[in-house]
Length: 261
Image 1: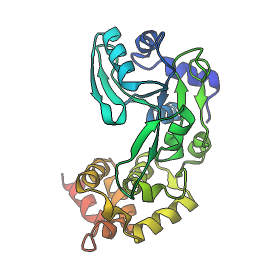
Image 2: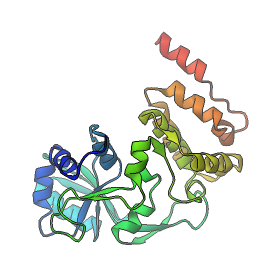
Image 3: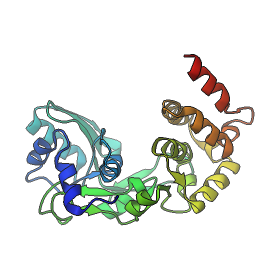
Image 4: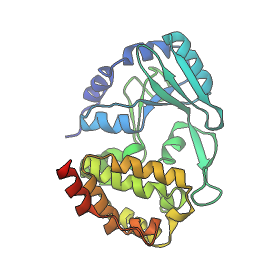
């Protein structure tokens, strides 16, 4: 069931460490909770990893927050991101940005952009939502939902949907991520998104991605509780042989191994 605005704000306010974080954000640029945490709060599930987006210098804001919270910030200047750890709360923070893929499967070139454009670069609509953290910002009061791509509607429909037709070409690792989200959430690819996934798989999109990036996505997928279901779906979409013609994802073997563990 879709939460009311008040219920959503209350859920946000109950997150561990959020009170300290919001207090530390006073006087800093507009900042938002984004990504999977927003999705999970809307679902009424536990939000584990906190990702923040700031309409300003993410690295500088991370440093300021680390100082105010008595923690540490580790910056990644190229993408305008940082990881902050503190006794009260830990989170990742990034400058809101646009991404341009100069060639399929490559890491994108990034530049600063407003929140709505930042949300439009994300993998799936259910991850393209934000909640305002800095009360009185242009983005509204604390807990205001920003959902320019209909992500909440897709949550209600239990649907995984990409934001544009070139999504799997820009970043083919999204093919593996789509299967992971299907498996974890019990959702299904939307019809148009599945057609795009099958086309990208058949065209060998995954073969242009670096080995470490594919490895990381596969390890995340293999860590899912319902890994046999994930592998069966991987095979059904042709993603196993898209990685390597000699590769065959054997869900039955994985299920048997799990039973014998």
